[in-house]
Length: 193
Length: 193
DNA sequence: GTCTATATTTAGATAGAC
DNA sequence: GTCTATCTAAATATAGAC
Image (cartoon, rainbow over all chains, first blue to last red; front, top):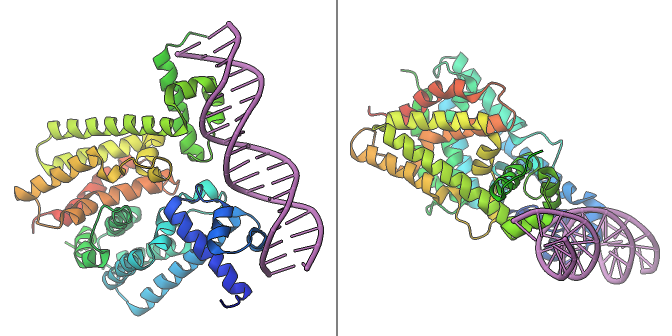
């Protein structure tokens, strides 16, 4: 075995918690479960995260930050909404396959139930970026003028729905195979006449 | 005060539990909370529902049955997917306003976390009815040929997304006002060229 | 069927040695 | 910073009178 740095330890606690939350849910996972699975002492967990909520919050901020970064990168690498949205769907679908626990935690978890005071993922940074992106495209005449909420729901609601189905085990094939058709489909909602 | 029949009592337990689950979540609601809020003894609850899961299951079956009935009625009253889907969106949006707790419980709750063995809402009766409805419209040439999962996600993913936003407090206006535009938008995804 | 009182278990959290 | 041992509160569930 090798010795762990403090950072490694913290990360391992988070990684382990994420998987347990994914498999059993936040409330069915005890701090003792995390301690056992991460092979770390319970004292260590409380030292770093204060309490169980602290673990949830740390995870939330980590994953939200990563998502923000991804959206930012996508917006830099593409100029039009059509390309950007497509890249975003690709990103989400890929992530759902490679990091299902993380995807689940971001999209699914009833955060309010265990992180009171934390603002909903729908009001968070990456979500706002996407809204902004759509508003811009509307102003520039790339897409139809629509209620912004309806436009974003129409553009990404289908993809999100498919992710839910996949994470629920209803879809058997990997999501990336659906990305092209999903996006073409969604685009029709907002495309100019 | 008036005396309650056994049925009234059971229903009141369920109604109370639903609201508490909506406000605080299943795991943050204790059986004692339900007992207190419903003004019923804890013995009564255990007598009727066996355990806490029993309450959740009874609620689930009740609400799923009501949803199945609604879908069935909509299918009877309309013949084409365009009308049926529109009526379904209306139904969902109205229900989200008049019975948010019920809507939340159906759409949102992580049922697997507290009702192991129960099949996901996505594999349940009303969901299958909708899938069938779409398949039929595809066969009859009312809509484009698409992967069925993508088609249903495209048609109703946007509406579901808006319901989530509304229940999360992100949308301030009542949903029914969005129904027409939402459905017109969604329909473009599947409309013939 | 309904009630109160109680048993049992387990969770979250802390103390204090190292 | 990490650990073990322990405390305390609360939740699910049961027993048994009415």
